[in-house]
Image (cartoon, helix red, strand yellow):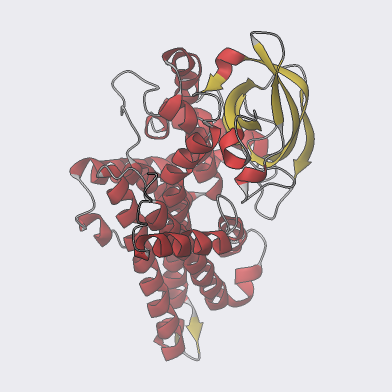
Length: 398
């Protein structure tokens, strides 16, 4: 990676710089032989195993290993995702989903749930997944319809469907949000740990997308789950899910940042080596303007991503606005940076198998998952309006 001057910013401590240096060297050497885009499931399993063996998943799954990080270090998570995405979008995916699929357990699980599920995920011997979205409930979590009703004293029965589930079909467990009905809307949801071999859970469809990742639709048909597998209390599901996304939403921006940095570096190399009209392509002022715009976009995204991560690590209970800004700007800007890199490469930029063509496919989904750009704008605006509204006067009854 050409420019690492951002590591001197005051957001980081020495442990973060050390993590970056070691992971970057490991990823360059280890990741490329493990990735085969014609075997996405196998690639993810190999990457998860390698990340676990290398000790890197301890950052995604705190508490999984004795002596590892006791809690989420969001700056470390962002640096890890940026570094892995720079090398391979699939490597970033493999790392991030281990964290997202265990985040609710780390934040709200019982000691027994943590003992049962975290070590294997942290070691890379188990694969985790987070099952939130449904055919009619994506950004609107309160519209979740999958139900969990009592089935005797010790079980609940899950019925419904989840879709666009990352690691669907290869995961060993799913954290599933289901409606338990304690209250209307979001307050009537609970979270459950569902092991992949539970009777009544089946893979209804594998979903192919432009950047190959393991995605699936899950069907729950009379799926009996022990009550002891509920994470947190009845009706706590929405709160747990939002706390998890509050941590991981900034890291989506970090992944986009890694893709954008790689695109900028690829474009710089191309502009320096490609001859056009008897001189390097980089001598053209239009190319220089494009490179300057790309560099500004990368640094602006980095500032927003690491501000959000630093704020969360500093003890802020929620970083809703900061994380939404980071995710929105970094993903949208990365799309533009990568598009310019493709343009600088010309015909080679759209040739299947080229790095910038791969980046072009990888970035598109990041503007949608974990809250589309339009949803982030609503989140930011509502937070601004809430903060600017005068406090409501108490009534006499209060």
